[in-house]
Image (cartoon, rainbow over all chains, first blue to last red; front, side):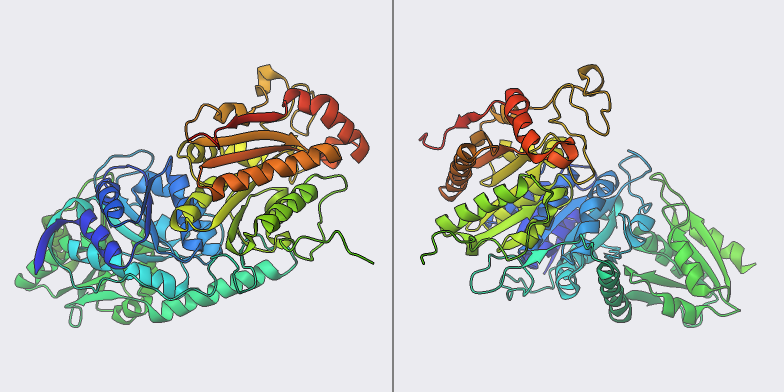
Length: 348
Length: 248
């Protein structure tokens, strides 16, 4: 049975079904429904909810909770995500499974409260200090807010890595019917690295200060090996009518919804257009884009920013065909007609 | 021959690598003795700070996590809220707790988090080589106050316990010192009381330990003891600052 819900609420329901035990957050538009909804739900279900004094504290509370092996999450919007980068870098270094949600708004600075996709670089290229990656999921519907809200916990635990759900103010705020298609979970096996008190075993420690010669390099190599494995195993994308396409639109999140409508419209106008939508931004679908990049094909990347994911599309295409870009930032939205016009102009 | 004194089980065999005359080793041992005596080693999860005490996980023989600079009270909140049956304490220096982590400290205290904080106040940043701390005394020369701490330029030393005293969530605050055996025994009593406060579920407690840092103070260990006694504890008076552990 489907239920009509808001994106931010669907995300919470996904996390709750995945066995969320603790949520730590701070109010910021356009994600405030998440702490508001969980303030009630978590307490009703005898779980942990803390409104932290800052985004910094909220992310570090998550660090403490997940260090003990429980499922914990924090959420914010762009300026608040900048503050969480400290803890994200530490959690990446400590190999801790945490879920961080970014319901992106316009930036830079305080920006505005409209939906945006300007935090792509921050999410997939590091964000905090040090050489690390986090797994980044990009929902493009309220349904996927639920599904990725759920799946992010299993992924983070499987690889012991922070997972970011890179949503935006539009998906967070809009309402769509959701099929609750995931099994609710509550019990999880003990983690052999978690800090639980040393009863019946040797004490464990979690540390990222690795001062002896060579050991930090070794730790970095361990992390890189993990990222490589994730790149092999976890790439997810939607491939829509690209087989015979001569113009392939690449877009993630809310932009992909606009792009898909434009592609359908272009098809009815006789233009062979297609859509490639990454669902995971790290790992990025370099290989499939590379395989689609042929001399008779043109790529168009559509984003609500001034050109971020397009850099990865260009890397994947590697000069084998042209890569065009259409983007607006600062909370401005690209209309379907703008994309259609762009596709038509590219047809030449 | 009878063995009447041995290393606490809560300390590992690792040798302390602290500087000569440093107070950290003494306080580590006091904590370990208290945890042994309360028989809570196997349910302890400690949080180490950034600074000289970051190496706590090498010396404590129980579960320890690192935290970013100043964030131990937030990390401890995450641990304790999800594991209320565990014993959780943070070990923090003056810069960690009262400069970069002041917000985390005040709000954990105000929420009455049922955790213990052992706060080492040695009036300077030790790990980085002796710069001004929030607790540096007026007139004290450090690497970043080469002319002595001037309140017009650097403000005043922060008395953290006195700052926290009016917060309802705070159950117990005491300032102790370790510059002589009598004070060391008293410090142990205070640390144990803080731990018992948490075990009894009475809320937030903090023990501030006035500690020596002779190398960064530019003194011999003996001179540093004299300075602690004659100057340091005059600026930071010892004693119980708040105790509502027995209040109903």
